[in-house]
Image 1 (cartoon, rainbow, N blue to C red):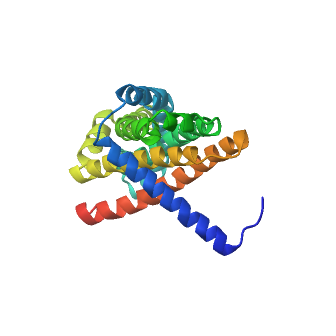
Image 2: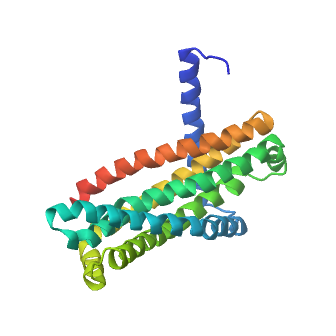
Image 3: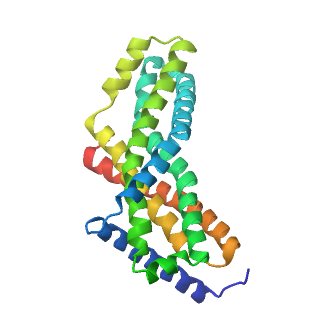
Length: 259
């Protein structure tokens, strides 16, 4: 890899941000205009939603299990073991559920989008699409954007449910807590602001996953090596963006709801 001078490197990064902004803007604008490729949207929904469900359920379930185990160990020192359900529910709904879902889907689908579109780019299928009068952004990017945002919302709910179920299983069967009081504390601890905060984050995560994955796929160069490079970059950048945006959204939600 050749070493670039600082000014060239900065210009490349600014150009990349500009390209990403233009691509994202066009993808959003195409949502509200015709034609809409419904068959592609449904195909992507099936791939992202049904395809990601097993890993989302497993990661959410065992995260809830570990969270319950760790929570009881810490809460015993303060005599507040009864608050385990509240801690697990708040942690899963407000933070761990949305973030873990975003990261899991990013690793699975951002990479898939980048590799798929990258392969189309290096084999000149996207150029052929333009020659036939089809807008690649409308045909390839917008369906993935709609499907990712829509399905990530429901995948987050599934992850939250699986996490709370995992925490309940561990707390009742391994730690000897009362199931009724555990579930009651989990339910009563969640207020409107907590649920809104937890279900707002998937919208931003879905947008990041789809646009970043498609961006690196659409600008792939260098044959098969370029496809691999684009796939790696898509996963790394989308994961970092998800964590950074999660912090920003959390800060805004705390300012709005106060918790």
